[in-house]
Image 1 (tube, rainbow, N blue to C red):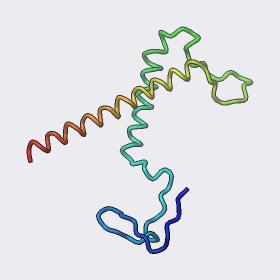
Image 2 (image 1 turned 45 degrees about the vertical axis):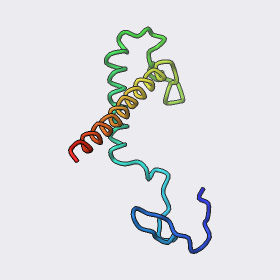
Image 3 (image 1 turned 90 degrees about the vertical axis):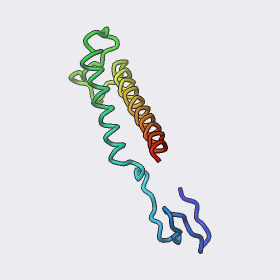
Image 4 (image 1 turned 180 degrees about the vertical axis):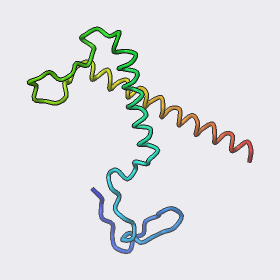
Length: 115
C-alpha cells in the first residue's frame, strides 16, 4: 500500500520532477520486463528438459514425479519428483541470472576501457 504524501510534493521520475498526481500508480507486475519473462520461460523449459530427459530415466521410483491417477480430484500430485523438478528449474534460473550479472559486469569493464 502506498503512503499518501502531502499535497504539492513532487516525485523524481527519470531526469525530471513531476507533480505526484502525474505519476501513474505502479501495478504489482510492472517490474516484469519481456526480458525477464524470457528468462523465466527459458529456465522452466531447460529445467524440465534436464529433469525429464536426463534425470527421470535414472531416478528411483520414489524420486519420480508420478502422473495423476484416475479418481484423484486434485490435478497436481505433490511428491518428491515435483520438488526435484522445481529445484532443477530454480537452478537453471540461478545460472541464467548469474550469467546476466557476469555479462553486465564484463560489458561495463569493456566500456570503461574503450572510453
